[in-house]
Amino acid sequence: MKPALGSTRHLLVIGPGSKQSGQGLVEYALILALVVLVVIVALVATGGQVQNLYSDIITTMCNNHVGC
Image 1: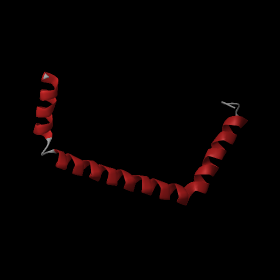
Image 2: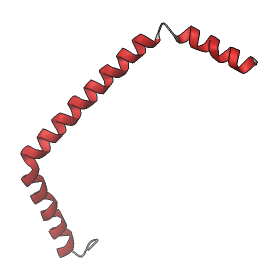
Image 3: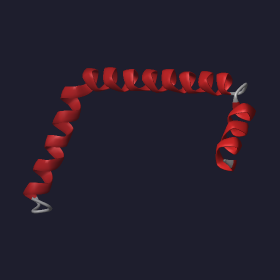
C-alpha cells in the first residue's frame, strides 16, 4: 500500500503546477508547428533548385568515380 500512497502524494504535489507545464507544452508545440511550416514553405519555394543541386553533386561524384 505504500507505493500507492506515495504516488498519490506525488500527484497532489505536482497537481497545481500541471496547468503551467501544460501551457508550456502547448507553446512548444505551436513553435514546432511554425518551424515545420516555414521549412515546408522554403522547400516548396526552392524545391527545384535543391533537386538540381543534389543532381549536380551526384553527377560530379559519379564522373569522378566516388561512391557511384
